[in-house]
Image (tube, rainbow, N blue to C red; front, side, top):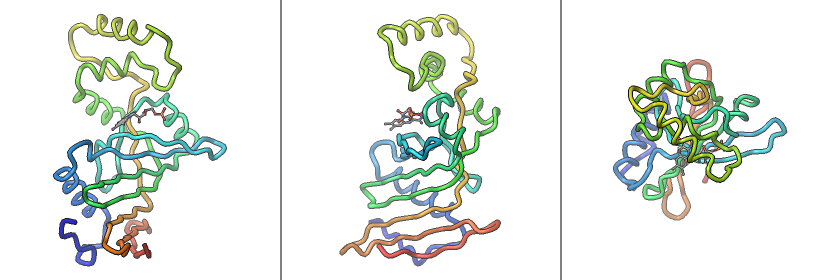
Length: 200
Ligand SMILES: Cc1cc2nc3c(=O)[nH]c(=O)nc-3n(C[C@H](O)[C@H](O)[C@H](O)COP(=O)(O)O)c2cc1C
């Protein structure tokens, strides 16, 4: 543990604490400290789960990017309620973010897409994420889109964009000795947040 004392924290907003924790995770975790598990559910309530990368965060919410025709994209279109979880093992910390996923703006998605490696940009065109893979088809499509975009900027595919999770509940979990872990919960209320602690 890195000297974090939850009782000293300003509990007006979860975002300052999240920023601190992510920065500490970036210093402590060797690989993908920005990886988060994202749960969605279909119309019947059947849940599904996968890892995505957190690409932006702040008072407006938590942003990730994906293929909008993927399973997660289809499920969000039907039910916008999602849960995201980040677990930083080396810090014994976990953050759980509950909220609603809303599409980012076209301009935001364009701006982020433009920062991606060219291979990732081409892959976004070539791969129908989550469709059954047929031998050779993906390779052929990669070759075709690579040839089609031999020079110049690769435009963002219409089916590739981002979602912003607008949170209404965020729980910060800090491991402590003897199972006396800290659980600090923020609940959105009006324009602000209320907080309380949970027993571990
Ligand atoms: C560390 C890690 C990071 C990932 N980041 C993303 C991401 O940012 N966006 C994405 O669409 N898939 C990402 N994936 C792949 C997803 O976990 C998943 O396989 C894919 O999005 C298809 O999910 P779906 O079929 O449930 O929609 C990542 C996987 C791992 C292991």
